[in-house]
Amino acid sequence: MKLVVGLGNPGRKYEGTRHNIGFEVIYALARKFATGRPRNDFQAEVVEATAGSERLLLVCPQTFMNLSGASVLKARDFYKLENAELLVVCDDFNLPLGKLRVRAGGSAGGQKGLQDIIRCLGTETFPRLRIGIGEPPEQWEGRDFVLSKFTKDEQTEVGIAVARTVDAVECWATAGIAACMNQFNSTK
Image 1 (cartoon, rainbow, N blue to C red):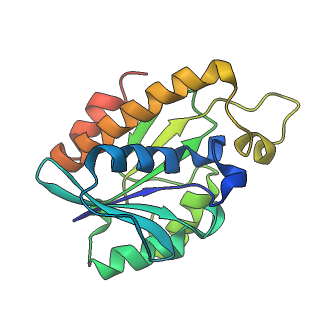
Image 2 (cartoon, helix red, strand yellow):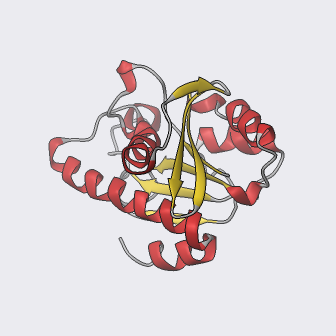
């Protein structure tokens, strides 16, 4: 079993926002790979899936972005997984729209959901896949920007990025973090 966590905020108010692109990836993964029915567990919406021969648990924490760590910790500990078997998918406004960055570990880089997961797990050493949501315009506060919806002009590129992220998650699950980084960090 491997754990794939998409970060976002629960509720209709946040659907389609930049901060919820992690949830969008989980929904796309579920459409492609789900083997079970969605359920509520670990303070999250979860669904079991299979990519190749790998069993996945797809997780959308329902604790709000900034408190995602408790949900991730509960799921990881329940399945007795190593941190290397966990992949967190989240937004990043320090990356150009649609760009993917896969890392085996590292700092939160200002992403509050990652920061809480690091705090709860007690380590920065777990894989993460960041999706570029574009940089906030000068007149915008970062918080307001991440809670805004993608513009009509951006939606096609976001759809392509979500599809590429699904492919990246499948690569991570079946071929490992190094193969995923080699394939998905080099292209937009």
